[in-house]
Image 1 (tube, each protein chain N blue to C red):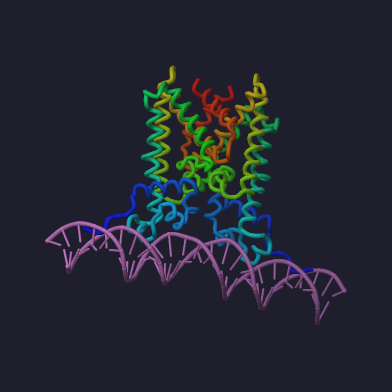
Image 2 (image 1 turned 135 degrees about the vertical axis):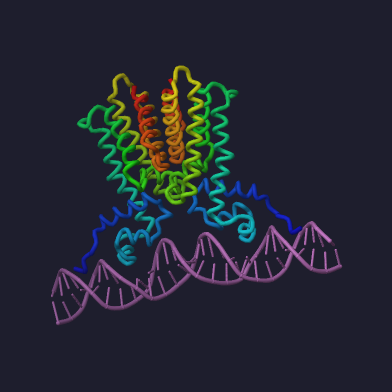
Length: 191
Length: 191
DNA sequence: CTAGTTAGGTACTAAATGGTACCGAATTAT
DNA sequence: ATAATTCGGTACCATTTAGTACCTAACTAG
């Protein structure tokens, strides 16, 4: 009963997420957002609330799309042993650090560093994602032979920390050699 | 042969570094800087070049003061065995994450995430600091029994990644329990 | 065909941004 | 004392910021 939308809000949100992911909240100006989303101011404020709401939505989207993918991979018994899945994840992260000339890194990790303290809503979302990742590692580690619950939790947290560390080093432009070394250390945590 | 400065540029730079450290480059407005440095616009532009130059100087300062301190600790034979120094460093990091309600984290780590891609001068400084830390870990690891050069380099890089990981988790407000678990995993890398 | 409704586009606003100009104040060399 | 010089403070500047107002375009229900 009115004029239909000429853009796909879902696609636009996706572009917004990518921009926030890449450059963070402050560095992404509204004009930058409009450019990558390929919409104008009018459409933006009609379809969405404001910049901050879009940022929070981008975090949700990252959780639903990317984090869920990672959690799914880490906990999918069809993708090999727990050990293989963990190492596979780290290999993919290392590989991504080399393929993306953009050095995207991990939105969660980036956001933890540059937005964590500021926004309470964002912080809650970020902590939830951290917990999801930790629990996914925990489940994968649980499949290793001879690990009790306590040990599995410890290892999961060590892996989580190693994961973020690799992401940060990715932003520093780590060499293939260095990535390999980091992964070899992760391997040692699994023995 | 002129009016003397009424503030200590060194102290002011220190305050500037703290602010950049805490909130990053973009989030620290010039007014914020002037407030924490306790000087006015006139003094700022007389004593320093511009905001970006102060940021770069803050990175240098962090390198000279904090990174050098960490490197010194990691490589000082008077501070116990290589193993003890490494674990001591991680304990201090975990402790800092709890003492600072501010959740400062590590300026290097923060800057890698939110400024790395943007500024070429900053990036060079950051990569130099990363190398210094890696080499410090390498020297400490070299003191462990039964490690050859290759293995020491690998371990050093694993530790570097774990270090940044813990710093990121610190920004997420990690629990004391979680920090302990992460450190226990670091311990396993040293066996 | 028309009235009603919503989207798209743009001119605009108030506030904040980093940076400059320029003034008076404080000091020193003569 | 005075000239020279640098500092501290502030008014100002152009630009950019996120957000709003409002008009026209496009569509649908009747």
